[in-house]
Amino acid sequence: DVKVTQSSRYLVKRTGEKVFLECVQDMDHENMFWYRQDPGLGLRLIYFSYDVKMKEKGDIPEGYSVSREKKERFSLILESASTNQTSMYLCASSLGTRWTEAFFGQGTRLTVV
Amino acid sequence: AQRVTQPEKLLSVFKGAPVELKCNYSYSGSPELFWYVQYSRQRLQLLLRHISRESIKGFTADLNKGETSFHLKKPFAQEEDSAMYYCALLNRDDKIIFGKGTRLHILP
Image 1 (spheres, rainbow over the protein chains, first blue to last red):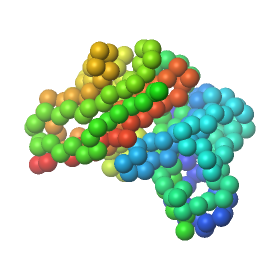
Image 2 (spheres, rainbow over the protein chains, first blue to last red; image 1 turned 180 degrees about the vertical axis):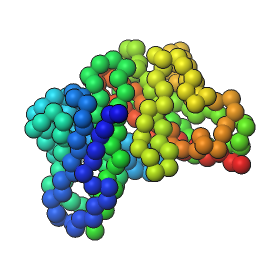
Image 3 (cartoon, chains in turn brown, yellow; image 1 turned 120 degrees about the horizontal axis):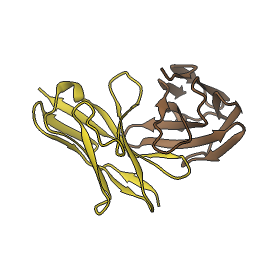
């Protein structure tokens, strides 16, 4: 079974705090993704990584950064959390082949107060 | 522009009635299209991909390149089909682009 594990299910942080969301996959997948999921807006891609130390901006990268020092781990960083970053964050991984499916973590619901 | 459009936010269907969840895409080239599903309190997971041409849980989806559509269909809805459904496109850069999703609610 492919496992994509996000470090926290729920997080509450204060405005201005630096926040780290961690994601680990155990299937040696090349690609890893961070999305935020909001009602009515679907899944929006924040950042994408296709290899260690490689990253690409998605559709909504502002206010976020990422780190991929090891193939299995992809971290999302909120440099200075704001209330409009309250959301469900989903991590996913996939093989870099055609027709490959993405495997998702269970999600982290972040509330910024 | 690469885009996936799901025009319905919510679709309510009676049990036993046919279901059609609409998806339209915008993409230059041959699209790789998928449907993902998220049941209550479960993680998002793949339902089907168009290359497979198979029926999963009674659902099928046909790619219509002329209409740039990939609608999801099931002839007889079941209560366990209630979930959030996302249409997705995998582009040539390996990025997965999702639609905004349709919540399917099966009425008893």
